[in-house]
Image 1 (tube, rainbow, N blue to C red):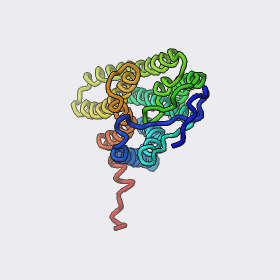
Image 2: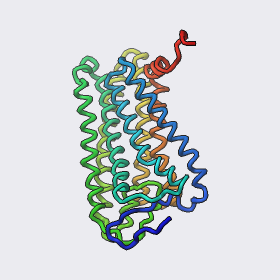
Image 3: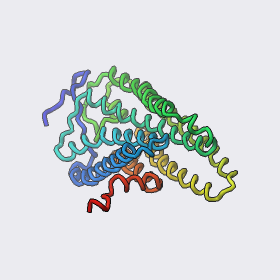
Image 4: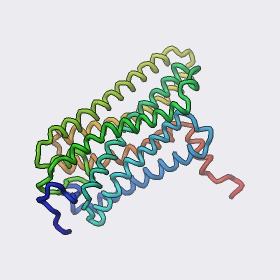
Length: 315
């Protein structure tokens, strides 16, 4: 691999090095990564195709789920193909612009997913606590507005991270010990004070995520209070079954995201462990989210079988 320009304050390229200390295992590491990525593509693709094909699923709950699937596909596709190219072909070179673009979409998509999860919690709150007003509150226009708000908030929150990095001089090594361009991994290569990037990159996105999580928790508390007042045990069981799916997805998203953000800035775990866990964050939630909903939501499970199962007449 030709040497990179190590002395220019405006870098042309960075070099992703992969998993430090495990370079000889890159081919083996790529096998589960590739399988998980293909599984995520398949699971989310089937979910999107099912929601698209079945008019009965064109309801707010399932439209939000389709948005979540699109965000999951964006998250994994932003990071995994480049990591596989690095593992298979040692293609670790990435331009400065492409690196910032990859970093932007990784963090932007995470914030978009946070808003979608909040919208899904609000959807369940209205459906359980105010069922007679569900159609009036969650109109198609309101669903589209929630999606637009998620995109705009994510864009406005993450764009300053990119601008702060773009103004920094990079006059040292260009080697990023990672499989993708993560915000602090890039910022640490700058030969200038990075406190603004460090605290903005942690403070605002983390605060936004915590705010979303508090609002989700408040929605769930109100839902549980309403469920306790239901006279029918069957109705309570059905609602709790749906909430369990939401809870699984929330844990899959927020726990790895918080862990990755805190470890990147304050953690003392070995770099190889940290990078492997960071890659699992962009692989496991996109793979498991549609599986959780498909397995636990009867309407989706039945429609998947209806859309993809071959009718008896075609046998």
